[in-house]
Length: 504
Image (cartoon, rainbow, N blue to C red; front, side, top):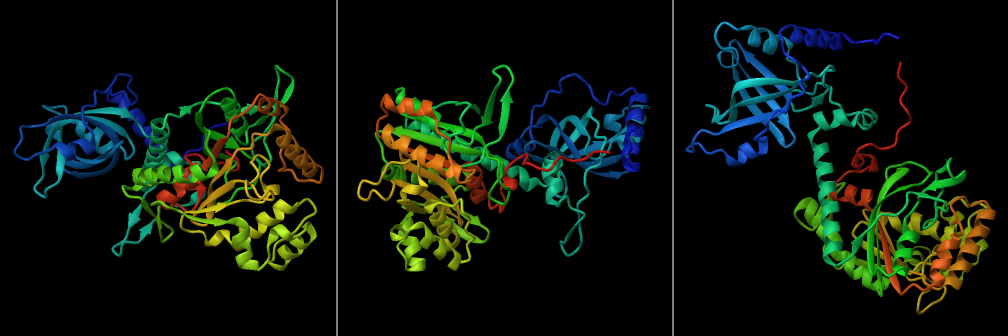
């Protein structure tokens, strides 16, 4: 089937051939020796210094032709750099075609070029590269979206449709410069956290993505099949059980930035593929983890914003320690007047219905309490808040509370109205753990497709003995949302999941 081209795309194919007719290769193989960047030029240029010769490469973003000369903007990986091109410099003698045809007619916005020249300051005060040599590096066969701004500052024809932006992130990164800054901040956040863990002596590890038993969380997995083993496998929903196996094996502290997969809904805080950082430290408990992780979050905020603060959707959030601490059941009682620990499943269901929460037969006591909390308390937790001491039914991998065996030693960290982290004093009693898994199996039989599978190898590992341990999982995508003021998780994922695109 013949490719259907727009008029602009057809014109660029014609320009491509014309460039070749001039004896210029539009996709050369040879290295272009870059010696400078836009950011470096701006930082190092001094008017009274000796002439600075540079070689710069990037994408052509604008051209202003003025007869025998032109000004253009070249965008490299660090920013924009103005360049000045004179016909007599790049087309000396009688060879005017290099300028009149190649540069004026066949070079398009979006093309990659390399330039060599020297840096000077224009009469209007702009630092500019005076081009002495120009090299074609790659022809752009599709036009970039045109962004126009009227006299009142209103933007028209911008590449702003979210579906287009997520599908064609490569275009989004070119024309919407703030998008790239989000992902640069994301990298700095990851680096800062990794540095915090490494300085504390914890070891970064890798655990399996394909798992025979999808354990470590209550979620519906993606299923696949391993042909060589003729065995069903699952994409991991969490890496928790593998990291705890390493604590059994003798590591005192391990962490992993883990790509996880959950076959569930998509909304502004959920994507089926997401990144979690999980950390497990031997001989610690959840109270220690609250104190420790405050410092990690402060470091992440400083890395992103240069200060332990962030503005998220118009609200100023402080990441300075200490964070507020509340109990889950106490917070629900404050809203309902009811102690949910004293209520049976039927009464809890009635309380949920009273507050407009839909109740189904598959929902056990833990799920009902979770729904009450999510509806009545969670939206108000804007500043960093540790919600502590979850009911036993909600935490099948967590140690029972030392003061009340109806509770567990668990906290979740909420910021901006949603959960960012989940942590436990880890359950290390293999008999208790087996009973919790069996309770999850009963929920699965009632139709709860997010109930946990029984991982018998993990139970065997616990039977060899695991020291007291504290573990935490941090939703990295949500943390990046908060620190970069992005309201949707898709904005902080380079390539979020989308319905497959149909091509003609």
